[in-house]
Image 1 (cartoon, rainbow, N blue to C red):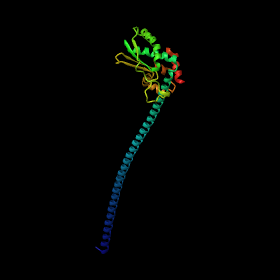
Image 2 (image 1 turned 180 degrees about the vertical axis):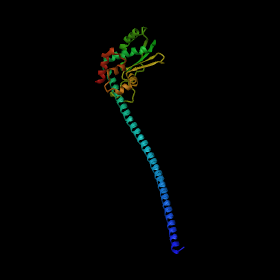
Image 3 (image 1 turned 90 degrees about the vertical axis):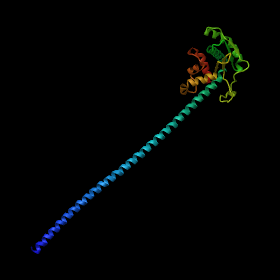
Image 4 (image 1 turned 90 degrees about the horizontal axis):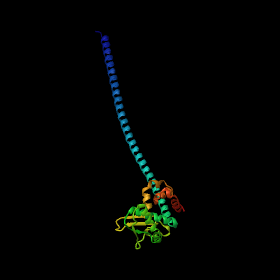
Length: 257
């Protein structure tokens, strides 16, 4: 074989080997790039998941914090509403207390009211012997209506009137000085207290006690009332019915004046 042919074959072999080497190198490069891209995508997705998880965690924290703040603001608003409502109710009650003090100024209306309260107390007690207690300043008034009250009791209860003893040793407290209803000293706006002879049953039928009872019973309605008591509210407070409208109106006028 000639040297030229040998050289040609060698060159062909070199080209073949070089071509295979280049193809192999390309395959390796492509495979490496694919692996790199796959790894890159995996890392990218992993980081995205971390970011989403962190975002969701922070979003939940913000949502929880927002709900807590909203709840706190709502509670604070409710407390303010309740405080305002409480102040309104207390103001209404104070206004009613001051009105009660003026009821006894109308001697005619107060005289009938005391008589009705005695009759009501006797009907509730239904005791054969009753001890009656009033303010010292109301003693003469009570004495003047006692016989009529006993008579009305007999007619309504259809039974003999009880023995009623007017307590001349212990009196109910007087009205507050200068009309100060916020006084810490005990006071009584009017009315009576009745008790059985043995003292086991006591019925407090004073204006102040009636006011306390009606405010406990009618507190939801009281919250919606204005500072001026309605006729129905006063009627309920003093045990009147709609048939006693004129007497009720007298008391309402006293409360408003």
